[in-house]
Image 1 (cartoon, rainbow, N blue to C red):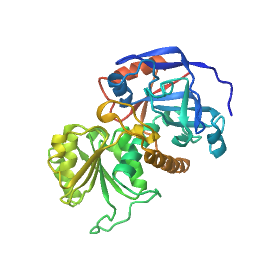
Image 2 (cartoon, rainbow, N blue to C red):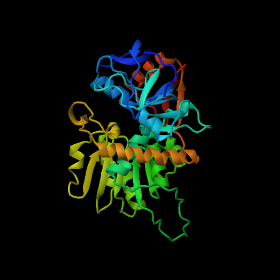
Image 3 (tube, helix red, strand yellow):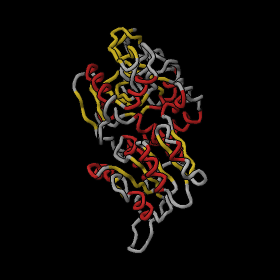
Image 4 (tube, helix red, strand yellow):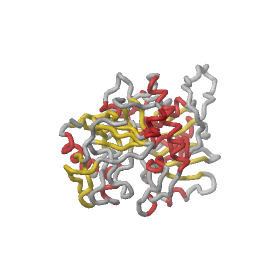
Length: 368
């Protein structure tokens, strides 16, 4: 089922390592049965966009991961499933800069996406806000429900009312970098799953992390941060998600995990020298959001992954759960900073992220 669709489109592609360019005649993606084609209305820029451009550039491949827009075509399986229809407003993520599918990326007029990895946008939500959802949901899902082993399904759980001397029966999970886009998404999912999310961030972003559901915030600048977390969790913290993944945040998480040990999950390869400090009690791993598509990730070194169909199944389940939470108004979007300039502005945003990461918001661009 399709609307009128051109054969060629405007897209941002890799011209060379570190050099994005606007291409006026890029091919519009063809659809497999489980896919949909989306006319792009807004995109968000992520650190992964710059990393792939800088270290794994494929000349001519479309860049970008986060998008929002309107469905203009459905593959046979996506149509038969009945969840989506032409004209629906949706948001999600794709594997941009993929040398195995170079025509697919978010920074294009038309995005080919898997139907079970998109979210229908509620009527009250703008395309621009919705564009911030995809990568954050995928990353948090794989980290929390995959690597940390926190069980699904999610049902919204309120914090129990406790007397002065009662202890919170919920299990603590530390989110280091609680004000990042992945961090706020993780906090919110953990809260709905019935866990007690605690977070680290700078004091300027305490209010943001609290708004998304963190039960306690710690200043990562403080020299007593890890000790304060151990005291608050009674030295029983067993799960830590590091959304920053620098040597100091890995060290902080390791020092905060309780005496019995547990699991540490990061969003990039971690410093092996740090994890060797507690090799017998803490099990470390790191998550790559691109495995959520279930296919081979054709990157070099540690970033290359074999096909993981179990991650596609997990993603499908989590996106269905998040859809339900969205429909009930129980999921907020990460703060955005709406930037001008259309496709030219997107290129400026990618170049900006090559030297600095925004704190507490995502860069989002409307596409005319």
